[in-house]
Image 1 (cartoon, rainbow, N blue to C red):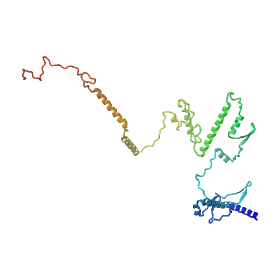
Image 2: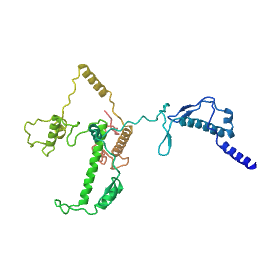
Image 3: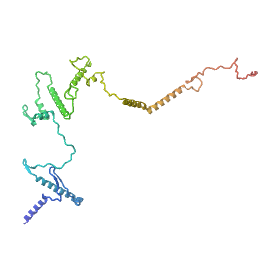
Length: 351
């Protein structure tokens, strides 16, 4: 009996670890199986949430019960076996989830893809590897391993008979590869421009459409002629050739300026323009730089003072540096035969 009791106790402990798959709720959950979403609208137990010790255990049990109900709904769907795995097909979702960004637009087709779609050509998926007979191994179609295989194959390049024997074949091959890469890049940019409906000019002609018109071809011819040293003065004209009237010729030939066809102004508009012009002229005030004006005034004062010092006479006798009049000449003294009419001489009476 002791052994039986021990076995029963062990089984009971195991059963306590695994809770039952049946869960009872006061209100049923709103389940969207398409998005694997379960919304529980039942009220939470506020007393257990306020307790720090019981909060985590309560939330864990609540999450477990809601997940069990969601899994029960999933297992109610019809099941299939695919490669030793049991799967179910989820229905279309009913909950609309908001998006942070708009739905991406489909990638525009390239020129070849449009042609293949119109002709019904289906591209079969190629393998990423191909068998190289020369190296006797599988080589990838692209990547650094492909480049390494090409170097291993082209360790020696034969010079053809119609080519100069001193030609560097490795350099020629590298140039051909760079031209091919540039051509592919140009084609890629053209596909992008065509997908965005951007008009691009054709190479070598100043046009803005895929096909050049007669006037555009005439303009291109005139531009080519005007590109000479004489600006097309001595170039012969083709039979029945007409002069181009497009933009391009006037830019290359000096002296020929394209006239602007301005609208004829009305008398009222012309009067307003003239009045506005007069207001601008009369209201225009000269800009005065205060620092420069003050410096100029101080400089003028200093120059004036220096001139006054040079022209001022000296106080001492004799010749001075700043003397204007000459005081060195002697005055005549009163001697014999000279009389001073202002003084009365003794023994004589004035009449």
